[in-house]
Length: 462
Ligand SMILES: *Cc1c(COP(=O)(O)O)cnc(C)c1O
Image (cartoon, rainbow, N blue to C red; front, side, top):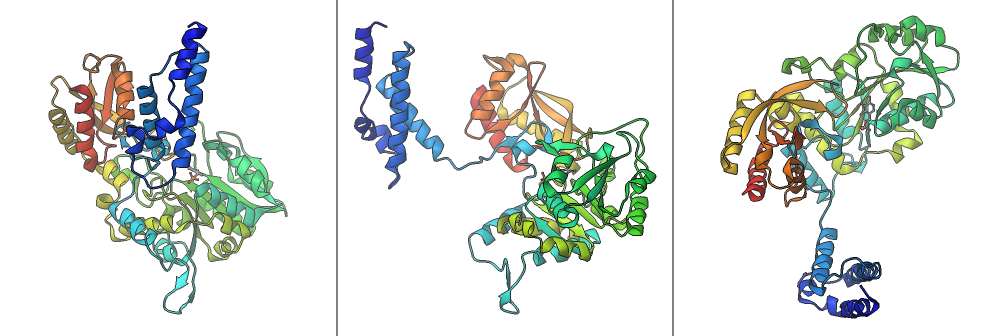
């Protein structure tokens, strides 16, 4: 571009006012807020000028206005957005972990759009506690005397250690002094709480004697951590929880058990390895058992602490409890998620348990109907494996059916391009690419999203 052409290109850029008054921007109907629109326009013009200065592309006025319109619409799009998960991991932290049950969603809408008795005792007509709502349910479900619910399991652990072990020693097995994910490291949390970490045993083998030998008058707790996202196999030893509990009782210190996922039911029924249940942990003598609300529980983000009243009461009044308290929408969704565990209806009501318990025949039927509705021949149905995910049941897989779009049907750019188009479409779909073919796992897709998934695919492929 010579300087004459550049000058012409600069001159041809529309003014802020003319863009504001253009049909494309003007017909975006909102009553106020032109200030942010003006800013977007200014930024787009700066970018367009830079592009001319650097001899890059010259954008036409129409394209520029269209780009600005899309940017405005994108900013006004509520987020996070709904996504269809055909990626084959049931509890995927990046995709928001557990989808909520219908009843949990209804509870959020009801309580969110109204005043509520969050911290108000309606009978007494005075201040109540937000902890009383889930506590009665959790006592039955866990066998614990008392319960408190906080923002997430990371804060449950931080609160427990801060309240019970600040300035004192906490004994942890070397095999459990681990990183869970998202840079969440047990030694870091201990440091943050003001506790002094005392690591015992070796990575693969730790005995009760190792714990016992480390106990001093400055010991405040024994911490057990579930190895949520990895396995140690082979020459290993971990003490029985009963024995650790007997030891902690003997020295009058609490046994804190970070269960991670917090399963309320037996997973072996579904062909999976047994995940320690909350009831087992409490039953075998954990003074506090900690777990997440949005992993195998299948509810909203939350950190649940159950156990001995003596210790739970200390947590409830600790200053950090206020900083990590659960919000009302999560609380509403959580209690609605806990109820079907009491009534035995979790398998039909809670989406992740519906996914885990879905039969291969039902997945096969859905896969066939997907293939038919997408309307393309040559789509194959393949056997595959779904991961439970989310730091639960490491390495555990469930048999599944995948719909496979073979590479020759994926269009230009192949499976990777098709996967990108699916992610960036009107209803984003997350899929998987394997050996240049596109795979869609039926098990992780909510059945009510089947129709949207088929539309998204057939729009792109046809
Ligand atoms: C997942 C996990 C956590 C963190 O729980 P969040 O609810 O994500 O904060 C802590 N400990 C263990 C063992 C976990 O598996």
